[in-house]
Amino acid sequence: MAEKKKSVDKAIEEVVEEAESGLDGVKDSLAKAQQAMESAKTTMQGAYGKARDTVQVAAERAQVYLEDAKKYLAEAREKSASLAVKTREQAEVLYAKSKEQYEELSEKAKDLYGKAKDRVAEMDFKEKGDQVVEYVRINPGKAILIALAVGFVVGYAARPRD
Image 1 (spheres, rainbow, N blue to C red):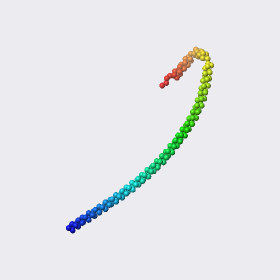
Image 2: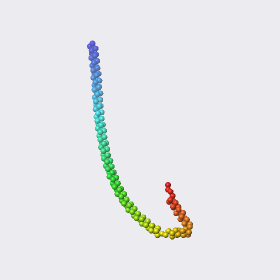
Image 3: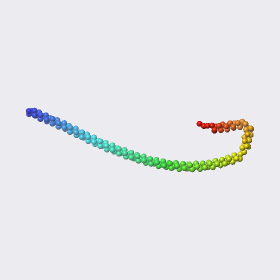
Image 4: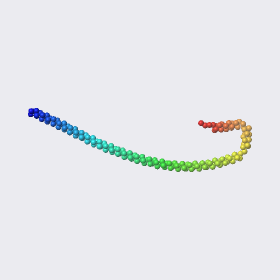
């Protein structure tokens, strides 16, 4: 029985040794897992910090670009307003000149109309008609050609346009 006891004791010792050996392996594995988790945590924190820094840098750059865009838009607005003022001034000057030229041309047209009216009033149409009849009698060929040319011009000017 002692031998059995020894063998039981020995078996228990062996089980204890195996259990201790297994527990040491588990402890080592758990320690390694703990270390791996810490490394992962550190890596994740570093990546988060880098990402946060990268995002912050990108946001700051975007802010700078937006400020530049705002500045350039303000410049464009000022230049557009300046251009509008200059254009309006030029339009007013051109309008004044055009109005002045129109008034001058209107006066000239009135003067020419008055002169033409006076000349027509001075003309003796009966005498001019007699002169035309006399010219046709003396130059019948030329008169026909002139009449054809005048008829062509009047017909061309009076025709309907598409």
